[in-house]
Amino acid sequence: MSNDAVFEANWLEEQLKEIFGATEVSNLNRLSGGANRETWSFEAITKEKQRSLIMQIDRDGMDRLNGTCERESRILKIAKLNGVPVPTVIASGFSENVGSRSFSITEKMQGETIARKILRDPQWQKARENLIHDMAKALAAIHKIDKNHFEGIELSDIRDPVSSLESIYEALDDPHPTFDYAFRWLRANQPEISKSTFVHGDFRLGNLLIGTSGLNAVLDWEIAQFGDPIQDLGWMCVRAWRFGSGEQVAGVGTYDELIESYSQESGREITKTTLLWWEIFGTLRWGVICLQMGGDFRKGRTNSLEIAAIGRRVAENEYDLLQSIGEITG
Amino acid sequence: MNNVDMSDWGLPSRTNYPYDAPSAIELIQAVEECITDEIVPGSDGSTKWKLRIAANALKIAVREIEGRAFHQDGLQAILTDLGAVDMPDLSEKIKAGDYDERFEMLQEKLLAIVAMKLEVANPRHFK
Image (cartoon, rainbow over all chains, first blue to last red; front, top):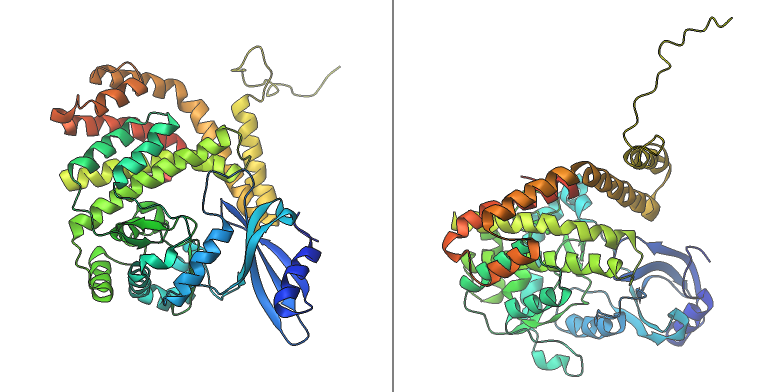
């Protein structure tokens, strides 16, 4: 057993036995990335077949997040039935064998999630060209899912996004004047909120599995909820999610391309003003999340260095907020 | 009796009395360079990734120690300009709408504060 796994290979084999029959687990490897959960890849070998699978477990001490792996797997199944590209769920649940946390086992799909590779390496050139269209199409499919399908899954319905975000910021009780300035600007310039739909909540490179010709799967549904669908579009325009690229949308395209593609796929008309408002909202949201995650380290809920370092990314978001608001008002 | 030339044996003056050298900053820098130049090249996967985060965290720590006094003076001057006592007070005043008529001036002052933070946290982020 490698990589200090919190679970036993035997336990994993027992889980898979119920589904595939006698199964041998090999090549168990912990993957990097993912601040809120642990991710493992492994091979499940039966007499007939070898399957590449992914196992995810909630990270210890992050109980604040209601987006557990078990809950996410229920969302994945619904998304799959509604034409959203996602991995197939093999099993999920809670177990004492993973520290009484929840887990999910899904198929391992081909592709790359590391944004900097996708944005720079020549092998992803074609994917980059198709990405705006693929992302717009996937988002349109996500936003079209009938809300009734989610009955029994606890999903918040955010009617007043600014107040919701502000209540998190206020609860943290760590004043950041630039955030207060941004909240004030967002309130003064708020566009009409669109009819609430199912939204992914964290749709961006890093959470998307990219193949050589485009989007293969949408991952990381832990903060999916109901709300204004345009927030998913604005979120991927946030500068942090351009990963150093100069392109406005997810580091691969322009606002106009996204607006055109999404309008075509969804039948929903959106304006650039609205998209930019949601980008600024997204920047503030990421800033508050950075503050909150840094706080998880400061309060001893995690000793992860990665999460500690995220606390220092607050300043990047403050800078981006002042730049973006300055450009719009200037 | 002693023919060795000792003329360049003199050590740099210490900056951190009563302690000895290397100073805190020099120690942190030495660890950062050791990680970056010696350990990172021989590592891969999640270990390499964690080491890079560690080295970057140490660089932030060095920039903070070097910049803190200067930045704290700078912050105080900006707060005085804005008529605020400290950052929590500035937050309260913004929320109360005290600068609504001078939003551009506020934006400029906030950018000056944030620039000091970013110089320490991630100077490559400026555009």
